[in-house]
Image (cartoon, rainbow, N blue to C red; front, top):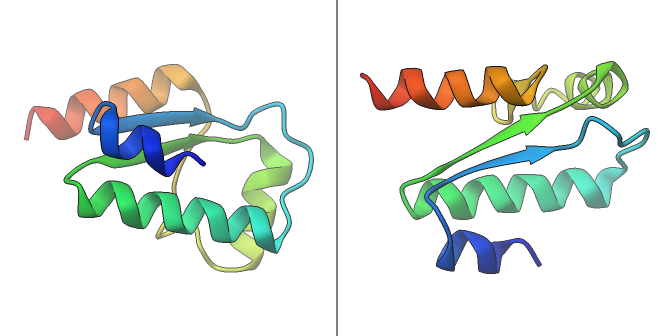
Length: 85
């Protein structure tokens, strides 16, 4: 569903999951596929998460693959820093 935005939209996406209380294996799989598609197109995906989602991502050891950010502002700053390199 979100991959169409990667193909047609901006190279970098910030996905705010801050209001999400639960992510199951299907959701994690979709996020992994989204990140793979975005990086394949030369972009990135920044995921804004809350402590529960972050804990789930760390439990399955995806924190190094998924770019987790605590706020939208920090996700934007992370993109700005990457663009300045």
